[in-house]
Image (cartoon, rainbow, N blue to C red; front, side, top):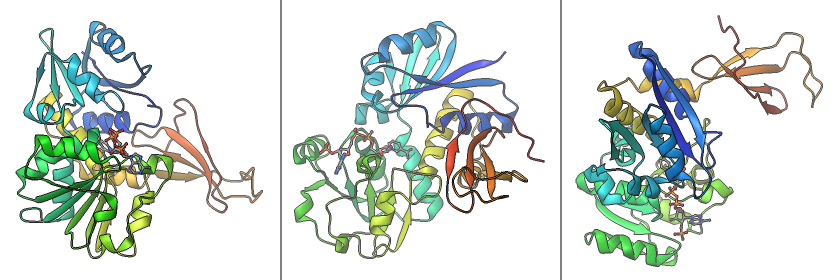
Length: 316
Ligand code: NDP
């Protein structure tokens, strides 16, 4: 029987979770549906309830509803309890079980990158929901953890919960970090952080924010000083793999899915003329892991246009 899954958030249109979970399911020949659900800002509870009463099995939860999801569930795993946030819900025997897989996803991705954590001096920038979710898994790896946040009181509140962490204001930061992790939402507003470049000197810099080409505003900000950089697309795939494991009891391969997201398939449209630069034979269609066209773009001038709906194209 086809099982029903979804991701809920606001906004949600650009979530890559359906693409990732359908690719995982294909590896095991599992029949699932996985949709995006847009809830109104105060509509999480009712929308999630509707999903589960209409035979939904599993729900991923993204911003701004992770704290609402924490309240919604009947039971919570230790990662959820430590962060006050749930990103994965599993309906089992009429009970809703809540998990937070974000921190596990981050640690798995840092391990994929070969960044050593035990004993490392780690700076987390941000103290919102995502930062709360990664503090405990990072401390469990034996790091020396500091947190800096625009609103200092929020970082202080985090120290109230984890007394071993140090807290700084932006203006107090010095250099000497092994790993710096950006857990702010500044990139959503295309903003860079008010932190001097020297803070990133020789540090490995990770951005929880992500985009297919990896060039997030934070990565662009730290590129010249950092020893190494990565955006959070790998974390997104790893936290999804952990959710998939919870729901289906099998662990999917993450590497091919991450590679597929980084390098979407392109098919040039013979003879087509770009509506912007008017060149011929430069237009291509980009498709996702399922082979559905998502974008029409021009190789020469950078013009691109979203394609609505599931237009299927033959890639072979
Ligand atoms: P929240 O809204 O809970 O927190 C936002 C944080 O960003 C706060 O610390 C806030 O500071 C800070 N912030 C926002 N704007 C700015 C700015 N202009 N300058 C400095 N600080 C700013 O969001 P989340 O914690 O849920 O998400 C944070 C990021 O993590 C997002 O980009 C999200 O996409 C990403 N993420 C990625 C995941 C992945 O799998 N890769 C998983 C989860 C999240 P203040 O307290 O002062 O408002």
